[in-house]
Amino acid sequence: MEISRRRIFALLGTLFLLVMFFKWRPVIKLFLSPAKKESPVPGDPDPFTEDGKALVAVVRGTNPYEMVREAVALVGGLGKIGIKGKSVLVKPNVVSDAPHPITTNPEVVRAGRIS
Figure 1: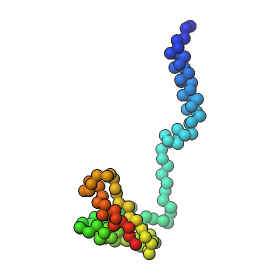
Figure 2: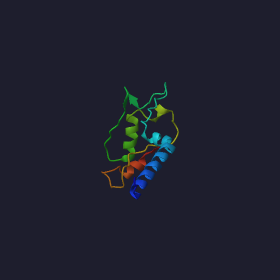
Figure 3: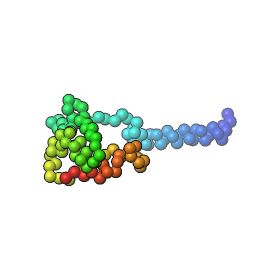
Figure 4: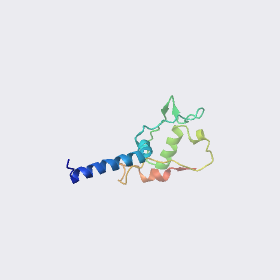
């Protein structure tokens, strides 16, 4: 039985892939296995939810600084998480470098630091 060079390379390639698969199996398994859902810490509920739903504030106006403060107040303020007297950065959803209104207004980003 004559074996061609193509057949030899195919067999060697298959053998190589099998060896690499078993060698890297734990790594492959890590990426292919479904993510484990971590349950929240009992007794430590999210203070910014009501009835299992996230609190959302919608504010309209022209002064971004006041609008950010009003939105934080509408969801219950930052006192809910025990950080009174500390500086906090409220991270806005900045999604691209496109000008607003496509993305977050830079004035809102500046106003996001609340003391």
